[in-house]
Amino acid sequence: MEIALDYPSSQSAEITANAIRPEMRQGFEKRSESSMNINKNILSLKVNAKDKTALKASFNVFMRLVILVDKLIESGGISNDR
Image (cartoon, rainbow, N blue to C red; front, side):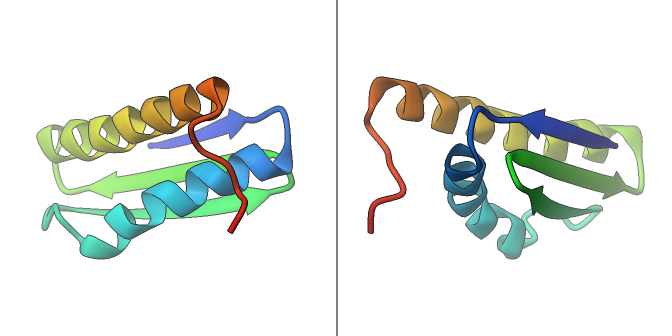
């Protein structure tokens, strides 16, 4: 399953990618693999899984994180400032 998220700016896409990247590295779900790509303001997430249950679980984790980060960006609670 792959989803492309269209952000208002490349900075917002990068903020989201940086926030979810640690989860992708953990390999928390042994039955699935995930990858991420950024092209300007488009963040693409791809999840491959051995079964539907693992696909749903992995995809839901990433979407919850994306939603959380989006809310934080909108509220001004997170930025790309280092």
